[in-house]
Image (cartoon, rainbow, N blue to C red; front, side, top):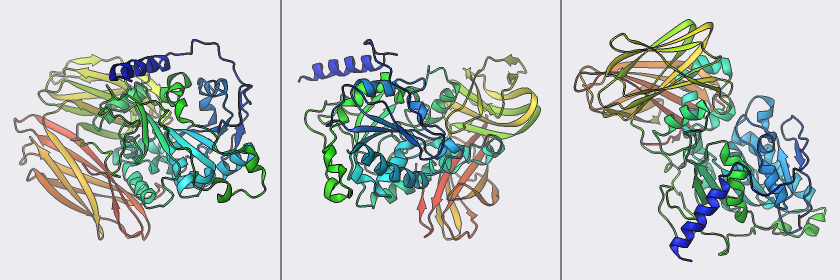
Length: 559
């Protein structure tokens, strides 16, 4: 097939997938009745056009979600049913209100995978959204569920974590997190450092590649109509293309096949009319006769280590427009655990706290800043957001408001964009007739002056290196604050803080850590405040997550 023809086929397939609903009339299957408890699952309706050689598809939801996300306001179940696939849907610990980490979810899921496979008498294929893909990998590799699974398809799974989870554990987010409960073992496990540790644990396990993984990722967060994706997309854009919650690089699992990056946000990527037809060719066959599983003893003698590998009949994926090089093979390999990290040069400013009536924060704007995306996140909606220019002019701005269903679940995002802002100091005022807590995040695009931070653990201290460009070292200060958590995200000691002048373009700083004797997570928030080389006021925030295992080894995505 010629390159031109491949491009045409890919374009036509993508166009069909992007339709809101299929043109053909689909039958609506009966809604599954999944109990509202962790581990509860239910089978979907058996399709009339099903066959024994087709695997069962188990749908696994993501963080803070539940089984019904696949069939309420989503036609994914309809697509699977009308294509002749038996289905199953499961609730993870998120249904209890407290999302758990990939280890606890993985152990639960592993038991249910075996149970579901034996119930249907065949191997299953897992389609997992977001954190559900991480839970699935844990179940297959750490908890030995791989013999019951033919393959896994992940939809915008943060295989390398999400910087939004790092933000949720930063020092400025504490007030809000306490009120909306955004800090949970599940959210904590998605910090970039925790996922760097997870990737290292998976890489050294001999079972890591016994089941093939296929991935899809979205790169369109704008125009979604959700202000939470507008904020998340703008924030994550500092780290690369993304879907509003997960970057496309993070969605690449090592040694896995990329099916496609496409114009989806974090919700549409799991919607049947957008992506089912794209991954359908990768579902494969059942790979084992149903009769073989009727035996009372199901084990490696039946399943072995065999899975249906990708065949040459699978469609070649064209990568034009994806930001990745085209390939003659339908795969893109990501091999290094830290390779998903793009360099972020501190182009955001974060503040947070409690408010009673009106809360005010200051933004600095240097020359050459084209726009600032401002998100005022609260536990309840505010009444008004005002911007006061350096000349004292008050702007009553329109804001886009909606409630977060992801990392900051339960919080309200109030987003506005400040285009071509006047240089100088601006005042941001949020007005409310209620009391509560807020997290203000301002994302700058672009920025000439730069700052970024790396950190590691050494003995009993956290060693940070902060590099800057374009700042006046004699008029700039650094304030660093470290929050100490255990591996589950629970605070284990009061925060430590340091304050010092910049003194040079590269500064090293060390802060002590508590002797907890256990695996720990440290989140460093550094505020940079001072002047640019041209004398303009400058304020930015740097956030770095560091995971330290019980043996004292450091894991952190490095810029």
